[in-house]
Length: 96
Image (tube, rainbow, N blue to C red; front, side, top):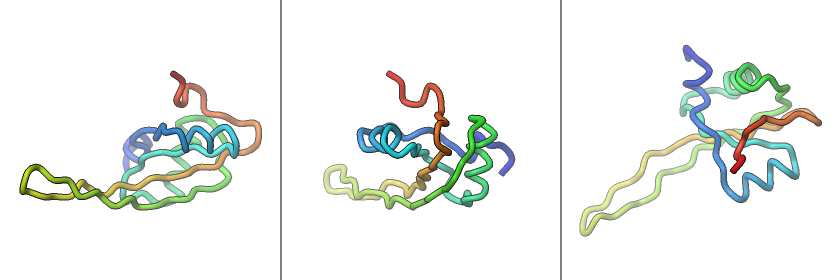
């Protein structure tokens, strides 16, 4: 990976992810599929200036989509759940 922005694609902002952020200080990101946990940890620490305690990743399988009689699948994607140290936050994360 050449840049941290290539590893961290964008934040995932859903109702469940907002509950994780407020209750457990965990943030969810859509990441590059071949990124490793140490790369994700380093990218979040450098981009946002926070201390990362743990990184959990998972590959989300693409859903079946139909267009009339034709069927195909969306692409698989990878998401990372990052837990920050106590008292640290990422500013402007999901603010509406």
